[in-house]
Image (cartoon, rainbow, N blue to C red):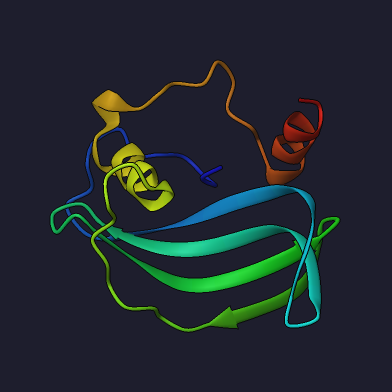
Length: 115
């Protein structure tokens, strides 16, 4: 899930977007248990690049960890998760429209859990 409104046209300058990932089971990394992750990504449509700015981990809607640190700028490979996020932002005409966007991450999680 990408948080917030997506642009109607490709942005001329880099934009920051939060991407949420929900996991069906609890994961553990470095003794931190989590079932959702939010990643702040900077997407540059002109350069076709993305860069992670921040990562936050959640367990049952409670933040359990977070770290800021810009990762290297990358050109996402076609077919990867970051590539599809970049394309949703940079090529609105090819975006897959949802019947009703999720208003927040709790609603998105509930939709995932119902599948």
